[in-house]
Length: 431
Ligand code: NDP
Ligand code: HSE
Image 1 (cartoon, rainbow, N blue to C red):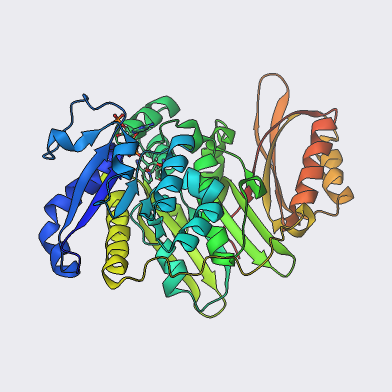
Image 2 (cartoon, rainbow, N blue to C red; image 1 turned 180 degrees about the vertical axis):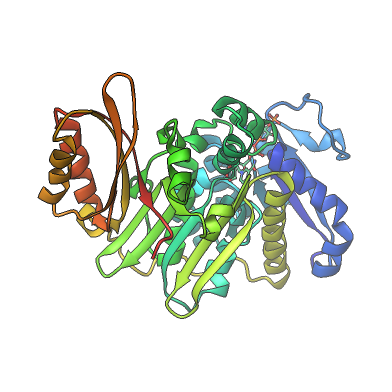
């Protein structure tokens, strides 16, 4: 009978220090739940001499992965370093050597998840990754267990804390983009390279993980249509407000008889939709199942202790399996071949914001570009006029395909009367 469980912690930054704090401060409760103590036996960091605010003895810290992987008394590896190369190698070597792995690393799970899960299955060890999506929200386990009997046909929501935090601060406290990003970084929400947050890559990786699980298929990063928050132009937030919408960087994964579509982009969400009031670093994900209908999962999407809660939840699950001797008993192989939709199979309404020369006949001409593409318009509005005889027009379409939208964008860019296509938005959350 195991007397204790020993952990090798790889990384002691925002998340790793949170994991250590929870394991230390909640040790009595964890011991009650598991029947044995859980100890951190070693911590791998880049710089062992860095000053750290922790009660863990200094001797636990090492910069040698080898030292941890070769320690037979270590049962479980917790990878919270981030990045792909070294982190993936560490996880792969841990699994190959028969140690279970818990990770918060969406970069690795989105790019090499199936490969690593296969190794875990072959070696009969666990690979858990709850914290890779939604910070403290138990979303992965909900998809794998709670909703296991249902057929999920859509997931939509906010899956990046940094950008949601930035959009909130820019809107409500008039912070500049740079100020908001600096604060998100200081609070530990942003990735080591925050362009992954602002350019939508972090959210895209999370959507790959969610869509693959929800639709039991291997969605790939290249399948995701990605636009980041730098696509949001001055005046767009006010434009959205004027029409009763809020701008959010949202992920969406939808499946129907034609296949799957996955996207991450700034969208207009109706103000009355609950996603519009998800603020700061909070995330919210709607999951739509054939049987369950609509469900919503909400909580902190980033930050030390919320994320560490998901990591330690995985540690508890892996420890329970270790104590029962049933690790690696889950079936991860996807049920369906990957079939992605083409752009003429994806439908939504769009806002197009266009700067035009203010001359006779412009409106009629531009409206005809929509008609030529069989796109029906809900509204056309002249927003503002400037001193250079230029006017801003906003076209709001009824539901059209992404292909129609792209064709119209091209037609607009080629039209003599168009100075600039300022921005465009898909509408999300409207029936
Ligand atoms: P940090 O940058 O705060 O911490 C990274 C830690 O890993 C540091 O302790 C660092 O050592 C160590 N490390 C990095 N590279 C190496 C290396 N090559 N060898 C040894 N040690 C290394 O990252 P976070 O804690 O913010 O993020 C960790 C993971 O969790 C990432 O995958 C991230 O995407 C994910 N995540 C983060 C969330 C958050 O809110 N921050 C939320 C959800 C997931 P040293 O201290 O010496 O520099
Ligand atoms: N940088 C990520 C975010 C961390 O802001 O959502 C949580 O995955």
